[in-house]
Image (cartoon, rainbow, N blue to C red):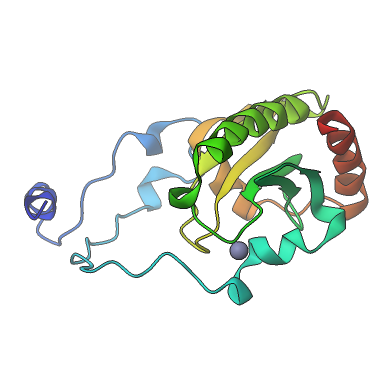
Length: 190
Ligand SMILES: [Zn+2]
């Protein structure tokens, strides 16, 4: 493990920065390559900070307490939408308990597969949607959340793994539009 950063630094320039990779050349990359530079590499964090956070600070726990955001309740998991989105829709499949994916037992894992698949289909069925992606990051809260962002149909510049970066910059959709779509997704998941 300790040679990972050694090798990365050996590949960096004199200023400690790696050169840009191939992604800035992609048509879907949000930024122009000639204005970018890579951050210098940090030292190892050892030990890493605990990913488990207090439920009082957890946005997922707060969302589970808001009925207008809940789309479907399962035995171990709940499908919610985010409080706002700049995309057509953003759904999260989350554990009912405040716990990371590490803690989900086999029956919860089976339900996770089912709900991710059904949520994907429910979002995919919205006529405004071009594609739906499936992501697990979970670094912020220590609460299992599989995020399904839905790309607007026909907006091909948002295709692929840069979608969350575009989403961070785009303006929010109107809440009344988002709530109306949530009703359709809720009925599809019933
Ligand atoms: Zn939580």
